[in-house]
Image (cartoon, rainbow, N blue to C red; front, top):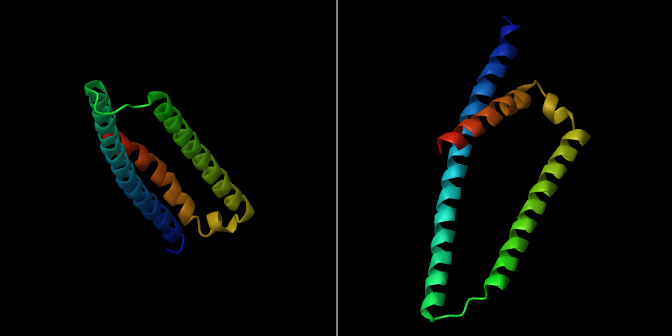
Length: 119
């Protein structure tokens, strides 16, 4: 009976990870859709106001600012991933403590993909 407990922990942890991953993926995709609509409406409003002559939009400056912002965000994401990988390499005991975090991770990634697809 003692040998069944780690398997049950693994299965429940992977299932919980899948559930949290699916919810996270669904929420991320919904937030991205809302953000895309808001940005699209903003740019459309700027284009309309520029067309009507109510304001002068410097499109090159706007493009450069957007490019710099997106480049900075991508750089931060890469830095975060590298930092996380380094922390796991320095402290491997975090990942091997009864195998539960590893099981949750293996459930989280497929759940994230399913939630992202359904969102």
